[in-house]
Each structure stands twice: as structure tokens, then as C-alpha cells.
Image (cartoon, one colour):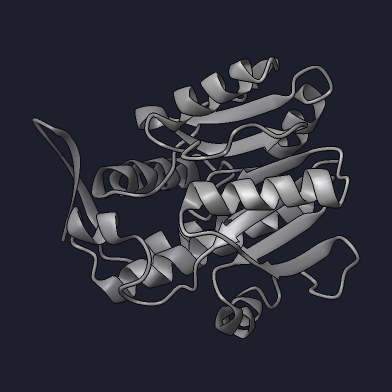
Length: 240
């Protein structure tokens, strides 16, 4: 099965979701709490899938903080759960180093990269990507704005700036340049900006009203928030 690496930053105020703070009413502290909630949801989704989980944290001093955050979400002593520090200066670099290490050094059959902003990632997509990797070397989960919420690889590509916008096209081109087949998962949202969060709030609230599945920790964060969503000429906007 595919090993899925979740690239996690410590959920500290002022260090995560900076674009969201700039484009929404959220404070840095609130954004950090939201990031922590989404981290739990994404890690939980991977843990429930059929493959191993690798939690990649940004620095050595963050390990205890990340482990505490995920206490009760995953069993840190399970054979298929690992915690390791990331290597690289950029997201593309860290993702590429992780994928290359797992595929070439540890001889994993396939590896996937995701992050907490992919809050709506579910076991369905993770297991579905493993099936698609049987016939394609690259499987991408597209997100609005040309972004990706999930990227899986059976072989390495040129990872330098591979997540540069529009990431879905850049990664597709890198896969095709390597002579690989590229396939895609269902389009899903990511939460990086105020507009993204407005859409997420609307989606979660409506799905809860209809008694449908939602990311648990994100839904709890939204329920505890005082955010409202209004429509304007530019789309949906968060207000208080």
C-alpha cells in the first residue's frame, strides 16, 4: 500500500496559514487552532486508510508538540505510524526529499504527499489513489485555483519547484516529462485563504444539517467559531 506523508508545521500563532489571516477576520491564534484541527482530520484520514502514515514535521524541536497534538488521534507506537523531521527549504523541496527518500532509499512501492490544508481528504481518495497507481505512476488530487490536495508517486519526478502554481499542471508536466502516466482523483477543496474557509464553513454547515459526513475536528472548530458567511460581488466572504 502507499505510504502517505503528511507535511506538518507546528500549529503556532503567526507561523501557519498566513494567507488566511491576511484575507479573513481570523487572528493568528485562531488560525493556529484551525490548523491544528485540520492536522488532526488529515492525519486521521490517512491512519484509517489501508497504507502506512508518515508524519513529517518541520524541525527537531517540533516533534513533541506534534506528538502531543495527535495524541488520541493515532497510536504513535503502531507499526504503520512514523514521525520524522522534514528536510528542505521549500514545500517542493521537502515533498521531493520525502518522496525520493521513501521510493529510492527505503524501496517503498509508492508514496503520497499531503498537508493539513487538505482538510476534506478522506480515506476514499487515499485508497482510490492506491488503485490508480497500479496503472499510473503519478496520481494527483486537484483543488480549486490549480492547486493540489494530494499527490502520489510510484516513481520519482523532477521535484524542483514541482508544486509551483498552478501545481496541478506543474506536477502533471513533470510526470509526463518523465514518460509516466498521470491520473486524477476527485476535485476537493483546500483551506488556505479567507475565500477557501468561507466555502469550507458553508460546506460543513450544510452537510451537518443534512446529516452527512464532515471532517470531525474542522466541524467542531467551525461550530465553536462565531463566523458567518455572506455573499457579495466577489463570492463568499467571512464576517463576524
